[in-house]
Length: 238
Image: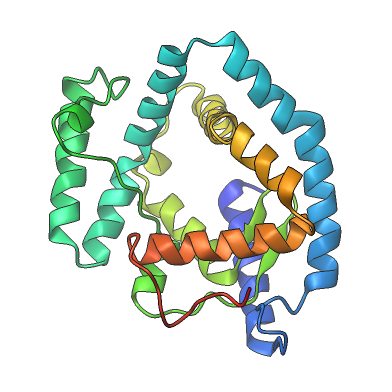
């Protein structure tokens, strides 16, 4: 089963759960028992594999090279951000994203250097999960996915849509599968490496790491949907 099929199956399953679940605690986590079990598995895998790889990557690869990888991956993701800017009715942000694609793909050597940021055009990220939130779609029950971590039905559906919005999804060339695997792997390493200290701090200071992670995820997604503006209507119950 390929990545699209897996995400579609997960999305449909999550959507069906969303229709029949209620959570009187206010944490939007009716499957907490199962989620906690998966969270323990994910944490064990992260401690055994992802974190050590991220720490090694930070020590073995010079900062300028890590920044180049980060910029390159961001440039690859920019068309998806552009599509969601348009779908959210944000012409100014869409114009910024388009400008970044043109500038960084040319002057920035296929995105390795973030020339656009130096010119005063900062990067922002958008995904279809955020777009659904802008349109008013509820998040649904909190979910923890094996290997993938925190999510919800809205964000799972968004992941599927983003695959179809990525122009590279429709390209086929020699070693395409290898390229996609390397790209996905590097995105995971890049994200984990940039958050080693932050996640270590959260783990050290949390009485209940699961509850803290759940709260931080929901706050972070609400902030992204509102482009950093406070959401006074759907504050998480802390």
